[in-house]
Length: 272
Image 1 (tube, rainbow, N blue to C red):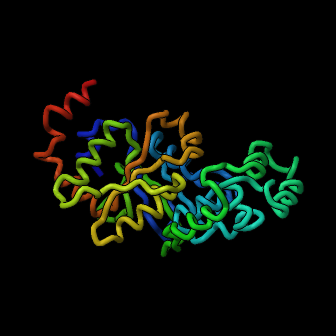
Image 2: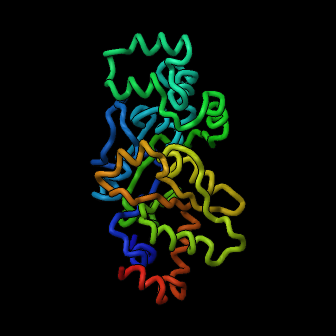
Image 3: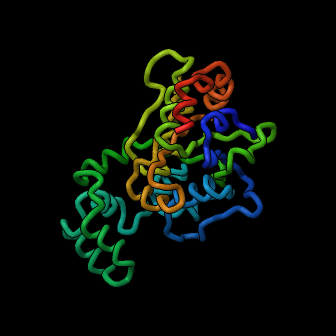
C-alpha cells in the first residue's frame, strides 16, 4: 500500500501494520516457542528491515508480550505467579519471604541480569499494590485469531486484508506532525494519548482499545525504558511510536491534500 502520509512525513522507517489472522504468513519471522525475548525487537525488524513477523500464544516472547499482543492475561504464567511479577516490576522479590526463596532457588540458573531484576526489581512502579492496580487497568483481552502479524505497511493489500492498527516509528518532528494530523479535522483536543505500559502494549492492546472507542484516538508509545534498550541499536535513540486504528489511519490518509503537510512550516522542518 502506498501511503501519502509516509511520503509527506519523509519516513525512513516503515510503518508497521498489525493484523489478526488464522493463517500464518509463509516465511515470517517468529520466536521459538517458550523463548524469552522482546516483542518490540521484532517490531524493529519490521520497521527497519521490512520483515513480516508472526506471534502466537506459544511464541510471544514474555508474559508482558503475550498481554500486549492480546493473548489474554499472561501474567498468570509469570514464573512464581502474579505476586512475583508485582514485586519484579516494583521493589524486588528480596523484600518478601516467598520472593526471597524464589530468587535463591534461581541463583545461578538464569542470566545474572535477569536474576538481579527479579531480586531487586525494575522499579517502574513504586510498590506491588500499585502494580496490581496497573494490571487491573490494562485492557487485557483475547484476540479472536490464532496469530498476530506485524507487516510493513507497503506490503499491505487493503482489498484483501484489513489491519487492526498501523504503528508509525517516528522521530520528534514526525510525531508532532502526526499529533496535529490526528486532530486536523476533528472536534476536541485529545485525539492522542500516552498510556503507561510496555512498548508492545502501547502498539497492541491500548491501540486495539483506541479503535473501539466512540471517538477513536491514537496512542503514543515506546516510552517503555526496557523496550527502548532492546530497539535502540536498530531504530536509533530518538524514536517513539504513534499507533492509530485502521479506520482513523485511512481518514488521516485522505486528509493529507490541502493540509499543513503541504505548507511552508512543515517543509522547513523536513529540510533541516
